[in-house]
Length: 83
Image 1: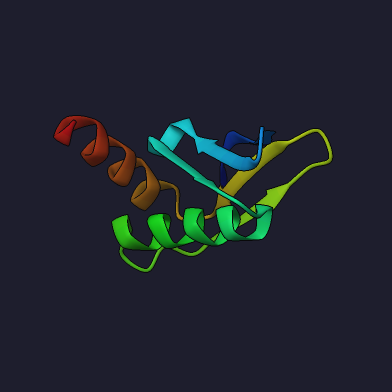
Image 2: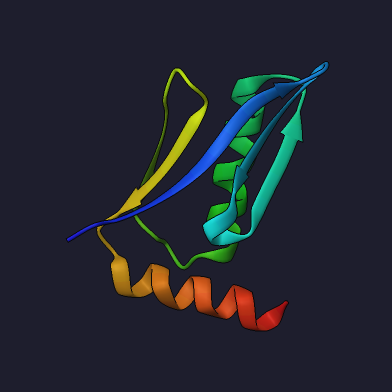
């Protein structure tokens, strides 16, 4: 079983923005590749060696997918409680 969280990546004027609401993450930057790297860095900061994959679709859909469902669920719960 795997877990998929959907987000979005889009151009906003001169910058790129990406959001992953399921993990309460949002980043922006000048280049699309920089935004993706920063998003991955933020995920790595908040997770304990979570094995995941992020893909983007043509329409700006951002998909976070992992087989570590329980670990991700605990991560989401922890982030929402701390806020």
